Image (cartoon, helix red, strand yellow):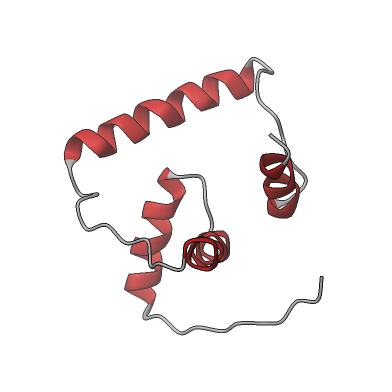
Length: 93
């Protein structure tokens, strides 16, 4: 598949804050934008929700991430070489 570069400019503070939130999901900024673009393409809709700031949701995400780290240490997780390998695996499930 051919690829092309996509450059964006953010002020430093916005980029740092955005990156911190994405880290809660285990994502980098480029991965998040790729997921966003693919979701828009698949659904024909912009998947935005403005209720994520709910503290219960944040606590739940933190618990899931903690569990994922434990499973990773125990060898119960799958490690992918890159994001595309993960997406290919998800397509075949």
